[in-house]
Image (cartoon, rainbow, N blue to C red; front, side, top):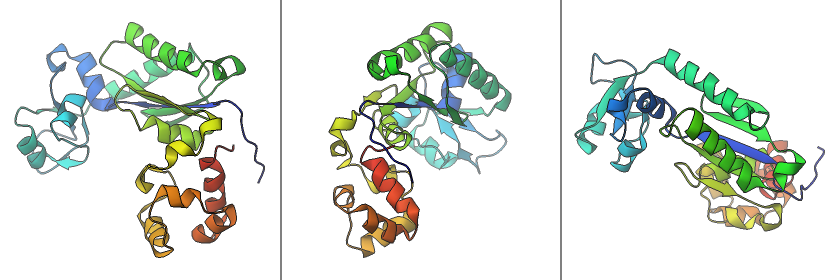
Length: 239
């Protein structure tokens, strides 16, 4: 396994906020500023909200929440049937706008992507994040926003991206790592699922702070393969 420790933030992770719902709001002025829940189809209440706007989230609605529960939490929730073609067109348009700012390294899903920063942008991570957000606002509209994480490697950038939603920017410099991770819950770390959490608890590791104090070899033993060692290096700012 080849590793190195970057001296500057090199990876940008971008996650669009409430993507389906925000695209619906951008496309339909009647939905703007209102609690919106996107549903698979509109002929029954026996299904779930697959995406919701920031206004709905503030009222307690969550993704993959049964419609009846969502309506109990937010009585004026506007339910909108999904429009996959609209979301695909919005995705393609957003990709083109972001690529006018910086090359995209990988598209992780319809609403998440990563970019590897060049030497210029590594020295000005705040600026590239601001330029991407401004480009989307000016060329597409104010209702589609994104959260951005920038760090030494993709794993850290993804964790950082989730910390300040919606429309936030979190930048972690390698010299500060792994300090910002100490209070992050296990479920916010890619690679630590429910089964792995149980194994960590059985080993007496109940927090990320304690996990960070283990050695790479201990991590490898806990995961029972090289993945644990790779996660250790990623969390400590290596690439």
